[in-house]
Length: 389
Image 1 (tube, one colour):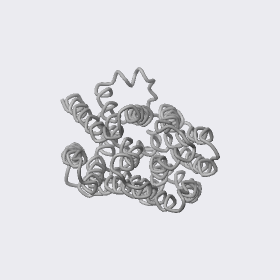
Image 2 (cartoon, helix red, strand yellow):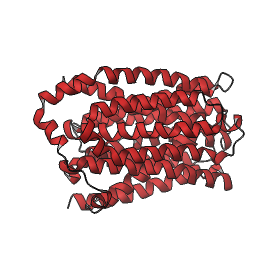
Image 3 (cartoon, helix red, strand yellow):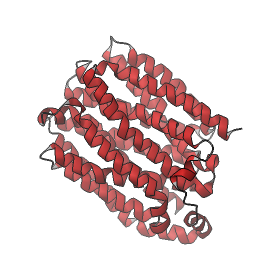
Image 4 (cartoon, helix red, strand yellow):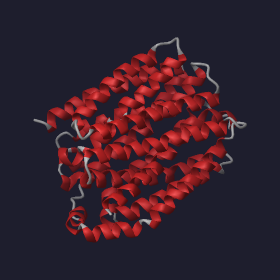
């Protein structure tokens, strides 16, 4: 039964990943159709992230009241409805409206399942969990690239994603009794989950190491969201690829992330989470060098793949360390704040880069990514000094 529930959780994380890579891949077609400025993408990403931050900060209270299973099911339904709204959008304002429930659903799923797996399963399961997220975000650019290849039909890409998400939502609803049976089978564990401390924002911020881990999540996600949201636009505007070709190329970034998390899951039985994080950072250094070189577009795409490969293990291993670093009794509150920090990055970074790219050039893309990774390395070093002393 424990293994079956883990399968359900993995499927939910595929659903979490599917919406995340759609918008950035479709944006070159969307802003041309609606005759929008390049930086207008920021409105949609900010609204999505506002919803995610809100849900993440409320996650501890919601989960303690309604349970992880119900929150996951309802939130998956919410994301499916939002994707349908995107596919039917007749104007840019409708995209903005649909972005809010999409963010709310994603934030609740992310916080609930990350903490549940961190508390109840091993590091290898956490890495495989995020590998399935990587599968979701890898599927989406492929779907969208196929749709864009047919008269730039980005709505068709969103509609197909909606159908997949609806199927996942149905699985979440059908599996609700499984969570109840697990609660009865592991009463003490679930009782501990229900009586976990719910801390306010100020109390969380005062915990040793929390500011450093927030910074690590913000900067790691900054590099990820920049690649996902603006990588396609960079390849079109600065590398001369066609829209559908660039959309297909971004698939390599997400495939790299998925492979990185799969390998991390395999290696988690032999290496510690800290060692896996360090290994990922080494790969990222090589990746940034490949991305910065100005001549060969194929090598730049390989650099995007390796950025995904190296960044892949960092997020899930930082997540899995949460109960160890800060204590299981407050892990859900800290987890929610970490997800909020990640969502803040998804909210703030795309508009910052969009404004920079509009006023300078999309050619700043690889250098911007390099700066984010450098800050991430410094934050993780600061975190280690606090929690391992």
